[in-house]
Length: 162
Image (cartoon, rainbow, N blue to C red):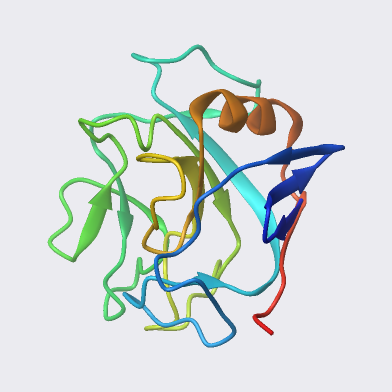
C-alpha cells in the first residue's frame, strides 16, 4: 500500500481516501491531526459483528467494552484496552459507522512512546476527503476490498511531505 496525492495505491487499484486534517507529518504528536509519514505495517483487523460479516478469518470482533487508550501517561497508551478504563480512550464500538471496520497499524506500537501519537487506523470515512485525526479513511466498499486482501505485516508507505 502506498499513499499518493491521488489516493491509496494497493494491488493495482487506486482508492480515494482522506488523511489527517493537518496532512502528513514526519514529526507526529498526539492530537496534532496529522497522518504520520513512514513505512508502517498492518497489525490487526477489527469489525462490528452486529453490522458486518467477518471480512477475513483473522478479523477480531469489536465488542461493547473494546477501547483504544490515547492517554500518553497510561501504561496501555496506544493499545487495545477494555472497559472500565479511567484513562482517556476511544470507544471502538461507535454509534456511527466510522469504526465498523478498523485496520490497525504499528504506528508507535507495540512499545508506545508517550505523546508520539495513537490509533492510526484505516477506517471508513465520514465523507469524501473530510480530514481525519490522523487516520486514513475510505468509502466503505473500498475499505472492505482492502481489508479482504491485506494481511498482518502488509506494508503501508506514507511518504514524508516535500
